[in-house]
Length: 63
Ligand code: SF4
Image 1 (tube, rainbow, N blue to C red):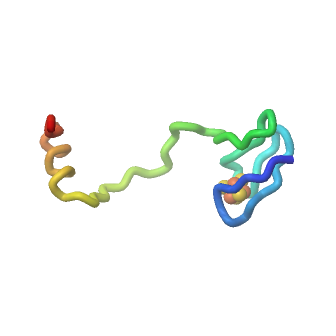
Image 2 (cartoon, rainbow, N blue to C red):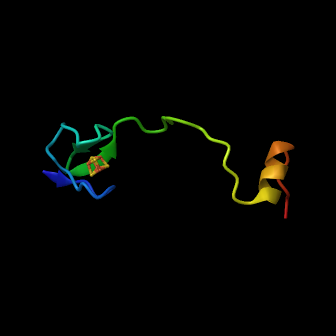
């Protein structure tokens, strides 16, 4: 059993099975993502307006 600590459920996951969310599994006593680099949604959220403006123009400042 390996305990997943990615969220408050703290699932105990046995080798090869998944936690409650079915997004993580246990392999060699490590918690790993079942679908790494897969995104569920992409949303247009911007924290820094100036950086997002540069991104929208396809340019990132060099300094
Ligand atoms: S396996 Fe999923 S539901 Fe369980 S603790 Fe990890 S992230 Fe949370």
